[in-house]
Length: 261
Image (cartoon, rainbow, N blue to C red):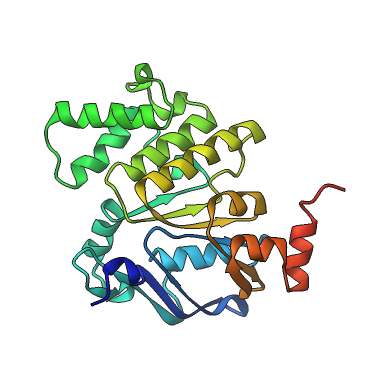
C-alpha cells in the first residue's frame, strides 16, 4: 500500500487562462508532493502570478483543473469546492504570503491579534493560550516580544513580512503559496527573511509554491523549478540542474543575467 507521503499533494492538469486575446497560461501540468518546494520563475508578464492565483483558487481557469489531497486522504477538484470549503482550506491547510504584507495582514490591529485571529478561525477560544502561542510565533520569526501589542502599521517592511509568515504558519498548514515574498525589501533584509523562511520550511516540512523573478531566491529555497515564458512552461527540473545547466536559450539568458560580469 502506498504511503500518503508518496502521493501528490496538489496536481495541476492542462491549466490554461486568457484575458481576451492575451494568453496568460497555456497547458500547464505538474504534481507537487508533501514537503516539496517548487519555484515558478520568469520575467514580468510570463504568467507566473496568474498561475499562482489559479492554483490557489483565487482565479478560475479557462481549461484544465487543479486537485488537492485533503487531510482525510481524499483528492478533490478545487473548482468543485464550495466557498465555505475554500475559506476553510485557507484558514487551515493553506497559507498565502503576499509580496505586499498589507494584503495579508490587518494593519490596524495588533501583531498578536493578527496571529491569534487565524487560531480563533480554527476554533481556539482560550485567550491566554492564543496569546502565548502568538507570542511564541513572533519570537520564531524574530519579532521582539514587546512588540506583540503594536499594530503592523508601526513595523518596518521586513517585520511586516515576518509577521505575515507567522500568521500563515501558526495553524500548521501543509501548503503555502508565496508571491514574490522578498520583493521590495532591501538586500540585507531579503537575506535575513530568506534564511528564516528556509529554516521554517525545513523544520515544518511544508510544501511551498513560490513565484519569483529572482533566481537566487529559487536556488536558496526550492527543490524544483519551472521556468515560464509567454504563459508556457519552457523548462523544468531540479533547481540546481536547471540553473547550473539550462537547456533553453531563454533560461540561459535568465541565468546569465544574474552572474557577475
